[in-house]
Image (tube, rainbow, N blue to C red):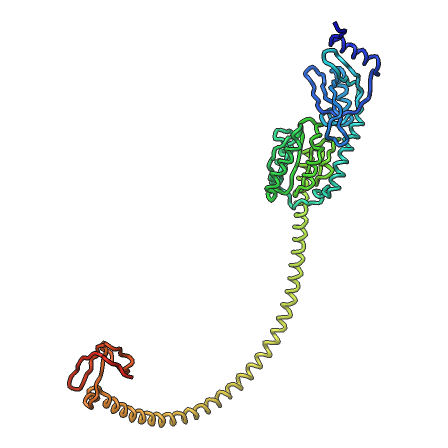
Length: 434
């Protein structure tokens, strides 16, 4: 029979070789692809390495932190970085290489260097910022301005988040008539980026209804900010047509959105305080304006009263002198007018007498001429009587009862009636001559 080993024996040789040839511990750099803590307190991770373009995996290994060290390492990491161990972070860790005959190869994490992760997060954030600047969009949202007064806000947050509830409560307690509407989105986990971008798209479709957008987060895992550190989300925020105010971190946290949004705050309540302060400033400005306007109106009224008094005195003096002068002038005009009227009356009386005499003579002449003309008309009418004309041998022709004066009015075949002195007859037109 061919010489052979059992699988367990081979795995045992591998385990022994690793123990004899490799160091007991190594410091390595890797990216956390998966991270979960089991009920027994052990933390299980999947570590990966990508190529320079970040598109292809070049290495992968399973790792764990046993419960007796997990709490200590996690607390230390969070204290320094402000973040929990989570997918997407690049970490510098001390690992022991383990090989188990049944479970195979894995890494036992014994220590972690948080400062490396801080540097990597900052590096990636700076890369995103540099890309936005190269695209020419990094400062677009910060260059916008809030309308005055700003009262209508579209809120992007998780509906169940305590931070959202605190924010709304603080606005309601202020007494100002803010208008808000929640556009729900995930504030932690893998769907942060896609859900916030979707909410921004819904708001953009009705942007005329809002003065600004507010992205707030609170009440969840205070360190789960990885979903906010992406280029696509940052680009959407930077290019959004409305000012965006963000309050997604805590005292030590900062994201790329803080660097490119119109305003950024550490907490949701800080955002609310800012909005309330804006309204207080507006009221203060209105109060100052009202006071200044009242003061100006009082002064202007006083000046106008003084000016009116001076004008009244001038008008009184002017009207008194004017009245006296006009009285004398009117008296003189009245005397001259009386004399002129008397002269005009005498002249008109003489002229009217002459006209009266001429009119009486002209009237008699006119009546005499008109009487003679009327007698002439009577004779002409007598001569023109139809019976007299008929006696002279003339006739009258009618068509349909209408006297025919011209042959052009008749057509061949027309029936006409001809009246003579001693009677009448009816005839039909046969031939018409011009």
